[in-house]
Every structure is written in structure tokens, then in C-alpha cells.
Amino acid sequence: MLTKQELVKNFTLNVEKERLKLKLTQAQMAKKLDMSLSGYKKMISGVTTKIDLYTAYLLQNMTGKWIFELIDDCEEDMELILSLRELSQCQKSFIKGIIEFEAAFSAGHDEPEDYITVFVPTGNMEDGMIYDSSHFFKVNAASYRKKFGDDLYCGIQVTSEHLNPVYNLGDILLICRKAIREGDTGIFLNRETGCAYIRKLQVTASWILEPINGYGKAITIDRQDEAASKKWIRFGYVLTKMRT
Image 1: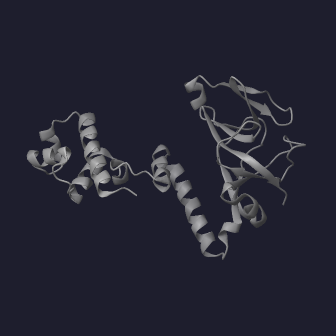
Image 2: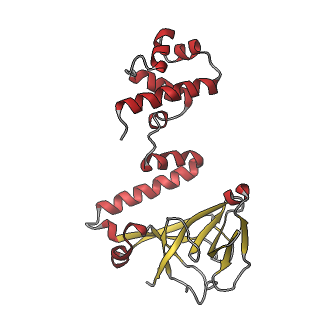
Image 3: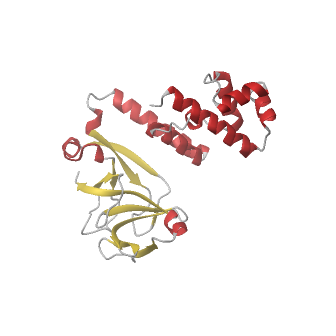
């Protein structure tokens, strides 16, 4: 939680940053914020520590940034909101549906944390499958929750025989969203192709995504190549499997 002094300092610094991005003079910025030039200068210099709510509202509308961004107070819930900007309207509607589903489920169960959401990808779960959509359901995983706690994030159901004998058709992979470590079986998504891979991570001078059962080719990612690394989303790793 920010102190009043930190909040005011962060806000006034961001006001000037946004002004420079917009290529406005201080007089022009003051006018857009419905302030006098002298009042604007007092604000950004710290002479006054009182920030008018209307000023913050006008700056939000002008920049498209929310108040919590303008005061540099992006906590976990706020970061979730920011990530929605990267999605299309269709994707946002899908996410909204998931939120409504989770809210309705929680209201109808005394111990909703005992259940996890299991995603069932469409298509054939082969090497390099196209992850274009999924449906989901709930399953009681109380014993696993007791063992893994909040590390247990969700489940992904295996929908083909391609991962035998490691994982069988119908198995539910219990996923942790923390960083994938060497030796972990991870879920890797390629930003460019939309393909998803279930691979074991080996770390050398590069990241090597090894097939878990010999099916498919190893994928090498140059750790020093920032552009190559950014092509991959490391979604999470498999804690264990659950048989239903």
C-alpha cells in the first residue's frame, strides 16, 4: 500500500511523462487538465500535495491509462486487468464467461477451493497441436489441493493416445503456473504459430524442449536470443497426473 507521499510523487512524475509522450507544452497540458499553468507547475514540483480527483479523471481519459497505472500501484489483480488490453473483444467475452462460470460455481459450493477447473483442448493433442479453443469442467481435487496448496492452478485433460505411456487418454495433468524448472514437464505455447507442446525442459546453453515419450522432435531455443525467447509462453509445469 502506497503512502500519500509516494502516491502523489508517482502521479506527478507520470503526469510529466505523459505530457512529453503527447508532445504538449506545460500550458497545453494544464489546459487539458482544467488547471491554471501556475497550479500545474505547483503540482509537478511538489509545492502542493493535493491532487484533485477530477484532474486524475481527465488524465485517465486523455492517456487511456487507469488510475492505478498512473500512481504505479499495479498489484496482482491490477495486472490481470491490464492483460485484458492484449485480447480481442471476442476473447474478452470468453474470459468474462469463465469469470461468470467461476462465480456461479463458488456460490453453489461450500468448499469451492477443493475444486479445480480442467481445460479440455479442442482437436487432437498431438505434437504441436493447434490450441485454438477449449471447453472446461470442474473436478474435486481436495486431496491434491491439500498436498500442493496454491501451487495447484488448474488441470488439462489429455485427449489423445499420443502421450502414451507417460500420460493416457483421459488423464488430467495438474498444472502449476510458477516458473518451469530444468527437468519439469511443461506446457509451452508458441506465440507465432499458436501451437502448444507438452515437453520436458532441459537447460544447457539453450533451452531444449524434449518430447516426453520420444514422439516428435526436440525444440531448441537460444537463451541469448531475446526475440526467440519471447516467441514462447511458458504456461506452467505438471505437478502430477490425476486419473478420473
